[in-house]
Length: 133
Image: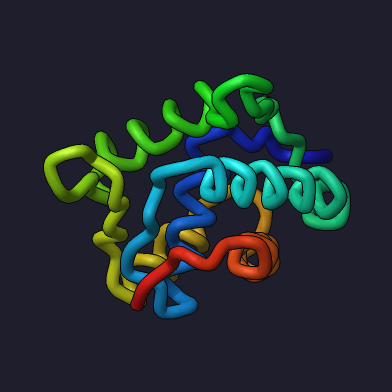
């Protein structure tokens, strides 16, 4: 039986796994960030059955603006759950507020397994160059 995976769980798991990889902040301005999250979602769709999860959301990029309402919603959810902050005056830098122990605790409580989110973090980092330690 597969566990339902929400958009918030996907994004929180991605941020926790990125923190585990040493990433402290992401620049969320421009299409590059949204494209990287979409590619990560596509990787999730391929890995979902192997990890026993059923994604209950979809990510689509706006064909004109290149952004995504669902990704903006996920960012807001991460900020509301105190997992990340949006820094600077125009809210373009997403700073991950997790240390290694917090990240591991979150990953152990999410649907799927920590290995799933680790693979998703690697997929994200493979297509995104604006992550900083």
